[in-house]
Image (cartoon, rainbow, N blue to C red; front, side, top):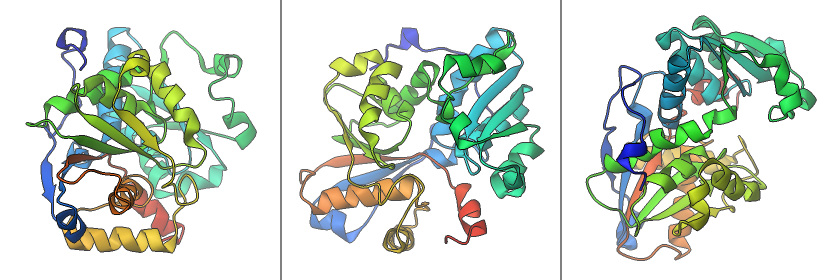
Length: 310
């Protein structure tokens, strides 16, 4: 667990519903396998900066303000939850924001980017070849300035770790297993930093070819390399990042109707589907107490509807 003495203090993004609700989930398969499941509803933390984005950005914005920075710059696709949240957070905090967007400028009218622009974010569109250089120091040099904090894609940086780690203390018991969706590795790294010794973590990779995530987690939180009890399931991506089959989308809708838990098919819905596949395969011990982290991203449903995908 991350020592309390190492956690930054004194800054928050309001309004913040903390601790986020912890809801018990009832489902026939859970009863069949004698498993108890709760959902940590981080999607309800903030109306526009929801889920893991709120937690990952919290101390990055505090750092920017403490250093006298006035500008946040980051990266994302045309329907990026991170870009959406960063624009809202910057607007609320009085910081200028710029989004480097993969794709064509025509996307500016979509629901995600129009909201970001409405919160004052400047949008710069780049082609895919340029976007691949988003971690290249030589390419990033054109954006560097003394008043600018460059926030990595997805908000995953070492500054994101303590914000995510805080969620562990919000759960009033010690679960056997934490489950969460995983893409850029920041939320997983923070959960590893915060978890209690005996607790296990199952991260469901939502993208194809996700073997790199473990290395990224250890880069963000070096102690993860020597911390036991966490693993990344690579078999539930359903075709790749932001891809999902009609069967998966139907499962998500049925699950939401059964349980009352709203999900989307890119992150939390795909991860919940992965959890239930793991359960049906017998890879989760009977009697387990599981906490599933809902990382937000519900704003993405509007974009999926605009594209005619749901």
